[in-house]
Amino acid sequence: MQAAAEKPPVTTTGEIVSTEPATGVELWRGVPGNPAQEVAIARAAWPDWASRPLAVRIETLRRFANVVRTRAEPFADLIARETGKPLWEARTEVESVVAKVDISVSAYAERTPQRRLEGAMGARTAVRHKPHGVLAVLGPFNFPAHLPNGHIVPALIAGNAIVFKPSEKTPATGQMLIACLHEAGVPPGVARFLPGGAAEGAALAAEPGLDGLLFTGSARAGMALHRQFAETPNRLLALELGGNNPIVVWDTPDIHSAAVIVVQSAYLSAGQRCTAARRLIVRDGAHQPLVDEICKLLGRIIVGGPHASPTPFMGPVIDNAAANMVEERFLDLILRGGRAIRHLQRPEANRPFLSPALIDVTGVANRSDEEIFGPVLQMIRVADFDAAIAEANATRYGLSAALVGGAPELYDRFWANIRAGIVNWNRPTNGASSKAPFGGVGLSGNHRPSAYYAADYCAFPVVSTEADQARATIGVGLRDA
Image 1 (cartoon, rainbow, N blue to C red):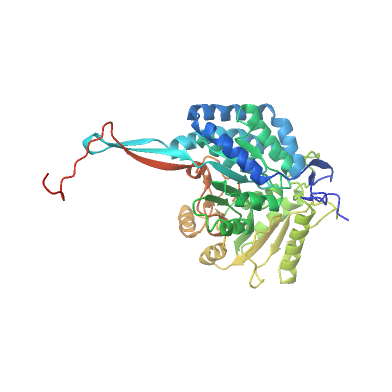
Image 2 (cartoon, helix red, strand yellow; image 1 turned 30 degrees about the vertical axis):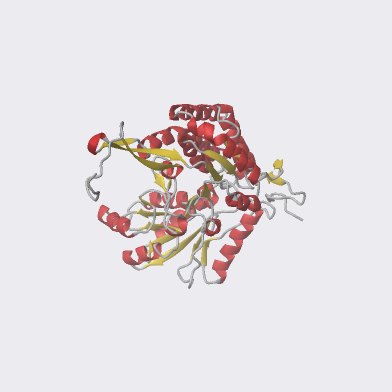
């Protein structure tokens, strides 16, 4: 029998059911959508939207921001209940949805400007941008409004139509996001809501009527999409994937601040952020004061439901299946020689609440290079800074990395040698600004950074050589007339 708090993506009747992780209460129920039908509707609606002036599309999206602003509290409450994250964190997600519009307007103007260059004989070269057409957006469960919105808003500004399939674990949030777009005046055919699971996602990606797909999620799913798109280079694929992110603490005089940065990096959102720190790298022999301070903070962290009092720092992971997986990964590290400094605990067997865990894996040989998507931080002790950099780079991923401590010269060395798309100093690995590009290398993406640079993949440049009159001669290679 299925535990009460689990979020079954599809029931035996073919319905999708979303339940609250913290309580097990059913939140949303619906049937999977039809990918072919949704793409066809979007394709029929797209030409009219693309032909509207840019100023009209921008104004429509600004109305969307106002709609979300007026619905901010119920929207945040829905996100909190469906994901289990604390209400304060859900509120910051709604704020990010609103802020994304103005950021995207600025990004589109900066990243896709019109240019004209004068040429010979009165000709000129013009550079303008066109939308791709119909784009699929596949969203994740951890930020079910903010992350897909980071694709949707710039895509719509550029003149594309979108078909949005949210995670099967957070369909209610996805539906509300699309409803806000429609209320703001985005034509219903231009922004389509497609509930579904993995089967619908795969079918959507295979639709011949798609011009591209924008994906945020796991590296495994990203690799599957990359294989699926291998024979269609004419279609755009933008992948924003996960990370096995390192945080290096080195020669810092402020142990407490370093510990706070580590805790924020590893345990915000119950560790369910693609930029969360997964590996803590420290100098062997000098690490104990930092570990003690981290453990003090972990002992004070409140884990609870979205509306609990006192206010929790973190909520549950998304469902029982996810909690089971995190527990299995933690136990595997123990069985392979890891030393638990702070054990992973699950207070209720039928709820996906997990306590923050810290484990020393220095002695674990052939550690698995994987993203444990939960509140587990692995500590590795090294002898010197060269070894710290080598350990930080010992991953196929390359999303986020941070150095805490050290002089500017040490940070310069760190920055120059770390292989990641986000490299921070004395700041957490997470909390990236939407006003900057966001993306990584290796298994963390396919070199199409999102956030501010999403404008780059939402429109393509068109180069035109133009003249007011046709003037042409052939100066060589002709017989006399």
